[in-house]
Length: 101
Image 1 (tube, one colour):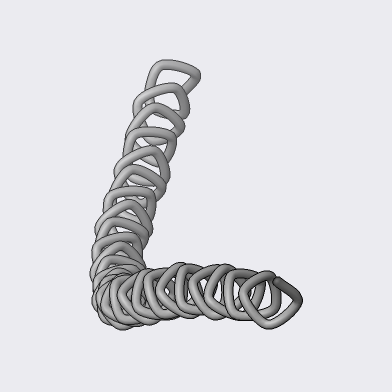
Image 2 (spheres, rainbow, N blue to C red):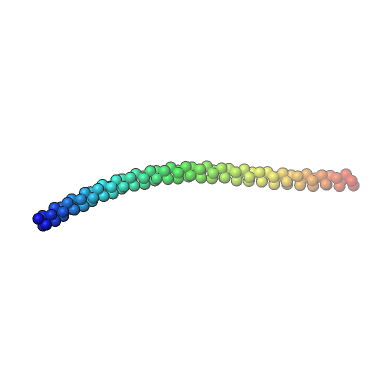
C-alpha cells in the first residue's frame, strides 16, 4: 500500500510539474511575442523621429547657407559703401582745399 501511494504521489508530482512547465512555456512564448511587438513599435517610432530630425537638419542647413550668403552680400555692400564714402570724403576734401586756395 505504501508503495502504491508513492507511485501515485510521484505520478501526481510529475503531472503537476509538467503542467507548470507547460504554463511557463506558454508564458515565455507570450512574453517573447509582446517583446517583439514592443521592439517593433519602438524601432518604428525611433525611425520616424530620425526622419523628422534629418528633415529639420536639412532645413536648418539650407537656412544657414542662405543666411551666410546674405551676410556676405551685406558685408560686401557695406565695404563698397565704405569705399564710396571714403572716396566722397577724399573728393570733398580735395575740392575744399582747391576752393580755399
